[in-house]
Amino acid sequence: MPYPFSFDLTKISRSFFREVARISYDKEIHKKVGDAARYLIQKFRIRELTGLDLSDAVRLMEDFIDVQVTNMRNKTQFLKTKKRALFLPHCSRKFMDGRCKAIFDPEIPTYRCSHCSSDCPVHQATLLGEKNGYDVYIIPGGSCIKEILEKNRYEAVVGVACGMEIMLAKTLLSKLRLPGQAVPLIKNGCANTKFNLETLEKILRA
Image (cartoon, rainbow, N blue to C red; front, side, top):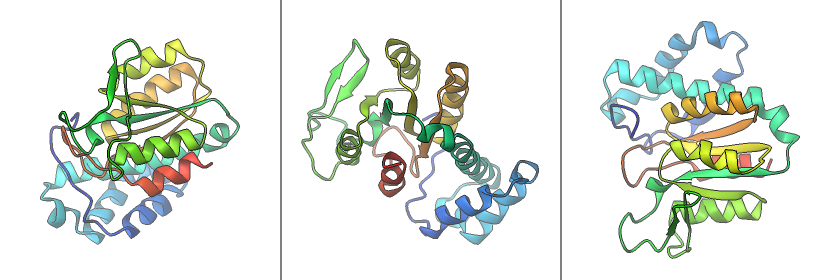
């Protein structure tokens, strides 16, 4: 949980994500991202629904906007690629104990989904990724990404993570000259984290 605070946006209206996308299309957004973040906080009652203080809420909203802007900038190059990897956070598994039958391979390192729970977000995301031709990695932490990418010659990457980790991964992908698309977590923590499966599906089908 890279953020020093917890957040849960699962109760936020779905129109929130459409509004983030709309705001991100503004060519001058880099000059007024703070104002846009405060606008989102007020319109969608982020503080009331999450319990975050203002500074944490602003930081979170700014990261959501930044992720969307980066996705847009990379999309043209991303769409030209074929060999892609999908990185999923292991903390989004339905179970984090023996009930999860995923097998960890330390050589990669990654978990391999055993598809033991049909309503597990990682199971559902893994099926979507494989259906769309992605190599899927369920990783225990962002530090694994560099090692995996160095062993393979992927042309592009899709990642699900909290906004802060996405920002760190963006630096790595920039150095490797790989276009990426990201889906930020809408609930963070060490277990039972959440992401929007519809958003991920839209990216994977591109």
